[in-house]
Amino acid sequence: MLTKNGQLIVDIPEIETPALRIHNLLSDPNGMQNTTLSTTDTFTIQEIEKLWYKEFTTFPIEALNYYDQEKELHITSKGTRFIFTLSGSAEQVQTLALLIKQEKIFPQRYLYIDARVPRKLYVCPRDDESCVFNLRQIYDA
Image (cartoon, rainbow, N blue to C red):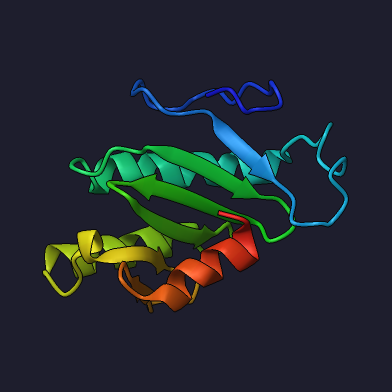
């Protein structure tokens, strides 16, 4: 995988993956020009991706966005944004996978699914204007 900044991340499964875009939510537009990922963050992102490809074979990754200060990885698949924190990443993906397999959650119904709280998900419906506002306000999405 090659980040937007040109950093090569090795050991990603041999599946086509979009480039990782790195964001910084500081008001300084020049704040991220030379930012690189730490080794720990790189490893964690790789782990999330490996679990994603294992657990969600029918959900191709359309976009990868990493928010540096927040230590968040956002995966977009089938128009839904999945939000993960880099701490506790495996548990977040496994919780999400379990709930989808048990048909307790249907990702296509949601604009975003926030898995940052351990063993819990926060979902935001596609037609909820406050959800759209949240994404634009917080992540400039």
